Amino acid sequence: PPGPLLPHLPFPHPLCLRVAAANMGRVIRAQRKGAGGIFKSHTSKRKGAAKFRTLDFSERHGYLKGVVKEIIHDSGRGAPLARVAFRDPYRFKLNKETFVACEGMYSGQFVYCGRRAQLAVGNVMPVSQMPEGTVVCNLETKVGDRGSIARASGNYCTIVAQNPDANKTRIKLPSGTKKTIQGDCRAMIGIIAGGGRIEKPLLKAGAAFHKYRVKRNCWPKVRGVAMNPVEHPHGGGNHQHIGMPSTVRRDTSAGRKVGLVAARRTGLLRGTKKIRDE
Image (spheres, rainbow, N blue to C red):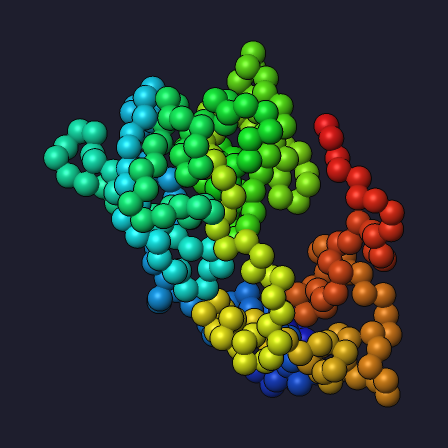
């Protein structure tokens, strides 16, 4: 289509683009975060992905014995990691895996992975082999995904019910929600180590600085109402106030998508928490 202001041109004139850009606001922080750049996670000092062993014949039908070589700190993670060495079932070599450590795990401990493993803290086995009420962590949501739920420090899931006919297990997540998963999904018995971390206050800005320095560039966080109108939809005004509803639609434009995006409800949560049980 012809350019604005100059209809005889097949494309917008550069001068028109400059005028349009002058009338627009600034690219706000939420838009800049999407591009990465200075907002990428700080991964240079991290010890690698923490996962279970790759699911193989040995784990599906028997068990493997591993030994915890060391408990290590992982930069930017609240929970410690455990380096576990397994003998390769097919070749003469050692395979070293990195697990998220559970509470009570120690160097030199033997851990057993597989369907025939015993019910003991630190062992990894399918949830269908565990009795109801078992406390587990680092739980798989799909068979063989090597652990995806309850991996933060102090987190755990609880086995609520077993359905051996359909090979399904119902679990209670750290959020309180209940979920049904395949009985062949694996989990580690126990709770993740490093619990109670958030009970100690940070006390000073320096502690928060070092906490987020190894995670990503997300601190300190300036409030939108404290900005100028050019920098944020909530900025400006003689008092720090939003001046409009804080809820916005899901498909709103990127520079306006701030506040409570596509909120189902707003306000204080009153009364007891109702746990959805389906």
